[in-house]
Length: 451
Image 1 (cartoon, rainbow, N blue to C red):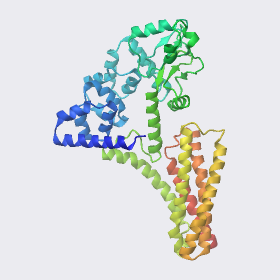
Image 2 (image 1 turned 30 degrees about the vertical axis):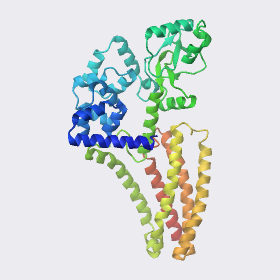
Image 3 (image 1 turned 90 degrees about the horizontal axis):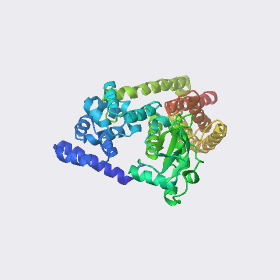
């Protein structure tokens, strides 16, 4: 999460660039812009409308252009790539890490991909192909093939001399990986052990073999969970034959966690986390219109239920005044449960073994809250309309709707997950339908029977 100081700094930076672009002082803009980290440049670009974004992009130094593109969301990146020349795209791809290059290539035209591959040496091309072999949202798609491996039978002194000859280490290197002659993973050699243990000891005497490597087919979300549970900075990635393919580092996992958080938040309203905030109006309207249409259908369903009790509502005007309270209480309660369950599924805390216990707990919470707030609403209703029957009816309806909201909040994401659908996508629409229909049916149905 960003603190308030970071947000204020970003807002100040955005105002500075906007004002400089309006004033036409491009030389100062170029100097300020290229003094920023690529991620900060990407944040500025995403925060600007299309015209100003294109002006600013022209001022980005070619040497960092590739890194900036990688930090942009998919839609903004695709928009800039469409306007770039082939030579510019090839230059942007040069110097990128293998895992970053693999992500970048998927957005490039075929002719550019061919030129990029032709410009690479055989070893780098082979590394890139090994990453591209796996889907983007797996460990294989996240990994970087730039690893340092050592044999178990050499001494620590030999390893140290090898590292001095090498001259530098890949970023985020906290351990070396121990492999046999067939490149099968055997264990890890932490740099702390390498530096603190006697140099005459062999790698096999010092290495740790208790950590399980990550399979290349493991999902990105499971990789993030592994890093969280074991406080990892880096981890080895192996294939089904236990051969070392590469490594995943914490900076890649942070990106996964951020993307999943944005996805969970935006998908609940039918939005895409990769959508450009300043996309063309027609494009944004089309994306959002789909879910508005779905919501309209569910709204008509709720209206149809109300229409069934039209005669009852005409006789007792108070029912029309009180109806929104029942639906609103159920909607809020259900949203709380739905959010809790979706998060639990995302982080792997909810499964078949504890789903029933969670359901029982949420039903109990819904019943307790329902009884508490039913008494409050009933008392206000009696004071307002002077009718004990209406107070009792709305009390029962609120209890019933909050219990049903808890049931739906647990079952909707679980069922969606069972059928392979994203629980975050559309879950809130289904929940709103359930709480509206049940709330109106319980409230107006009881009123029709008792009034």
